[in-house]
Image (cartoon, each protein chain N blue to C red):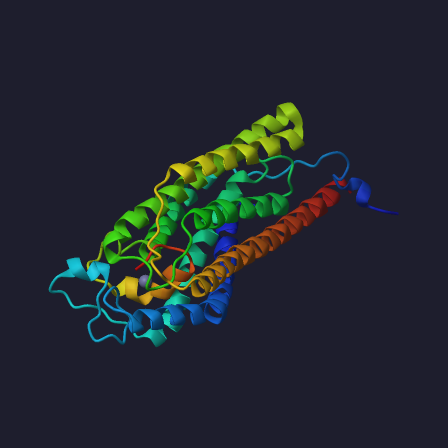
Length: 265
Length: 72
Ligand SMILES: [Zn+2]
């Protein structure tokens, strides 16, 4: 087992996870994105660009000045655009997750490689996707002003970073405590510490609410579909990487055993 | 008859670890690359614009919304 073997498997898992997220996002999420854009077009329609609008306008376009405004049709955004986004995000998180799994291999409790990879994947989903979503949930097009996108992005990524850093520290603390007070107490202490810090941070971090009078049913459906897309990505990532790592370990163990047997004859 | 006695199944087998020294260059290289990719898809040309314009933002627009990144 080495870093390269993990990275390759992480990228493969990321590819599959990106594809799966695209299919779920396209099937489950896009109808609500379209519904939100229909509302936007029906309303004042001055906030953001969506291909077909004659005057494309987006936050970055303001600073772009005399540069050409790049327009992508809704059909492309919905298909190739979503596919590109899902694949690149899947590949990136897949590779990062695999390297973390490689680093924690044999270092967090007495887990077999597949088991520690599964645990790290779960921690990854919770700290990277689930908890930031609960504080700053995804919003459909129409919601959100171009003037605040910088502020909202900074808040989102600060919270994401905090969540990941605290998850790392809590996992480390749980592993150390486990040696002294046992696995049960160590794991509970780690989870409790993570939740405590994250909940306090969620109370301290500035709220974002630009919903206005956006219809609640469309918002709920969109957010549910967004969470499903994220859960699909991380679920496939974790399941595939765990399977691949387990197989690699089984193969290497078999080879080692055969070698040992040959040496003993 | 069974050869399994030769296999190191008894007791706790040593768990494999990857030396951090071996892992470090990979972590550094892909850590930067992965972070950069995530940045371009999720945050660029909204909050900040490294290549000025809106091409990337517009292309991955639906992915940003559905994967929970701030947009609009
Ligand atoms: Zn948008």
